[in-house]
Length: 134
Image (tube, rainbow, N blue to C red):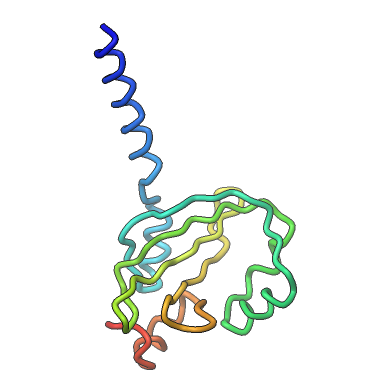
C-alpha cells in the first residue's frame, strides 16, 4: 500500500514538473514573428524590476528601450533557450518580460559577445555581422 502511494505521488510530481516547462503559445508566436525558434523553456521568475541607471543605459544602447517604463513594477521573466547558435556553437537565449499576462518586450543573450544582449529585432544584423549562424 505504501509503495503504491509513493508511486502515485512521484507520478504527480513528475506531471507537475513537466507542465511547468510548457512553452506558452503566445511566447512562441512572439519569438517566431521575430525570426527565432524556441528549443525549451529554461526558467520563469517573478520579481520587481529594479535596474541601476548604468545597466539601463547599456540596454538602451543595445536597442532595448522598453525596460525603463517598467522599472519598479512586478514583472514575470521567461527565459528560453533558442535553437539558433552563435558562431562558437553556443545556443542563444531569449528573455521575455510579461506584465499582467501581456508580453511587453524582450531581448536576446549572445554568450560569445560583449555586452552580450541584443534586441530580438536584430537577427538579420547578427547574421550579416557573422555573430550567429543562419
